[in-house]
Image (cartoon, rainbow, N blue to C red; front, top):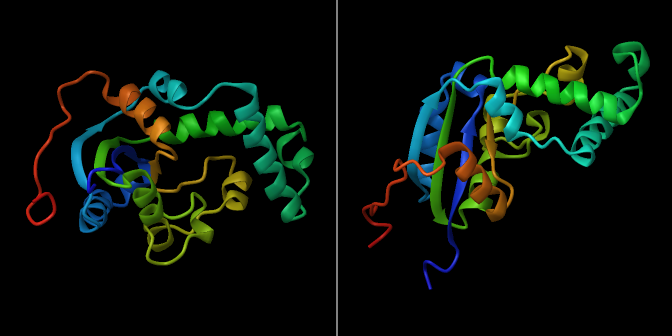
Length: 195
């Protein structure tokens, strides 16, 4: 029964997480919650790798634009004046481009994390994707104050320290995408946790 919800998830420490020296802190927080790191690698991503990590479908890109427009409206900022448009898809394409620039600006750390309810646990430890609303005690809440309003005004992606898969299906896809069939995923027992 203990292994019923044991699963694997994917974590990617982003450029700001690496530059702030948070790799060890992130690993520490995951391991303190009885999660195991079973694959780990620092690497410099190519634009092609990052481009294929983020969806290219119109619905996803339009949603990015909708979120950005929501931020502009919330702060009474004219998107046409700032970006030259108020079209969701066009703004979504801009944001996707900013994401690719951000994610290739420094090395990343990719890892596979395993444990009971690993997908949900990692997302809870990380906190909401928008650092400015993340609670203290979460990784994003403790180490970033970035927001969509600031990022949009500077025409860049939100610096939110790490990516964590949202669902077991997404985790499976991302592990395959970032690790492929490499023999770099390990199995081992942790003292006091795995028996």
